[in-house]
Image 1: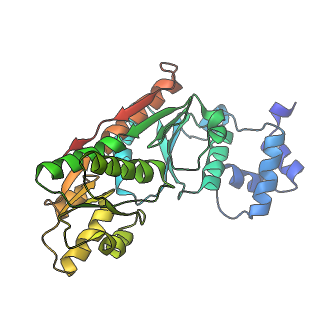
Image 2: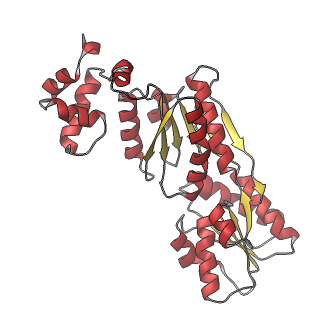
Image 3: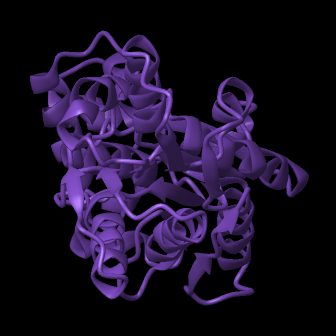
Length: 315
């Protein structure tokens, strides 16, 4: 009987009107957090989810996937999304975009809502803190991007390889005083793995490491680049293009023109504004394409979850 509950039943059990239940189902505004939680608790308790046939009768697509990005303004994630969308459209899927803002509770909220709405699959831009337990219900219909997790599909970047490419390029050019501007180790991939690759190269080639790990933001690059500049510094490796943009602005303002910048990203904005910066392309566009293809294959039963690593290339 529980599986046959209607929106009217959920409204009665929750003590709200049908329109309120509908707004909760569609993740619309105008519902207090307390009311939303009460309605969602009733739906979970009774195993309620709107049927696909009902969704189709309302004129909505019966093939829907979600793309959960960390930030809508992320240059790298937008490059990946740009290659996902055509792949999903070509197979008749309607993609919806959501933002996590690096918040685990937001990811949980999004995944819960998507599950109640019978979304076919999810591409989730991962970040540190997302647990395998919260992803378990999506094991066969989710692809993680930029993070890996045991038993789940993932498309990751070769963070160590990207830094090694930059360091080797600078080393071959004769640089021996190479500083590093990066991201805290709380971020496993962009932070810890890239920094450790820098330290490993320095150790292997007997270079003196000078590093600061302020964060991802452009202003953090601008504010903290002075921390890693010494009288001997000839080159600076930045973990991301955004950090490099901030560092470049500082160097320009201080009229410091004898330091070779290098960064990971190779975004169009960086190539246009600063073609002189040595850049590594981690494969953002290829990652988006691979993630969408893998998700479609899983949804249609043509592939088991697998882990894919995109090789980095010098631009």
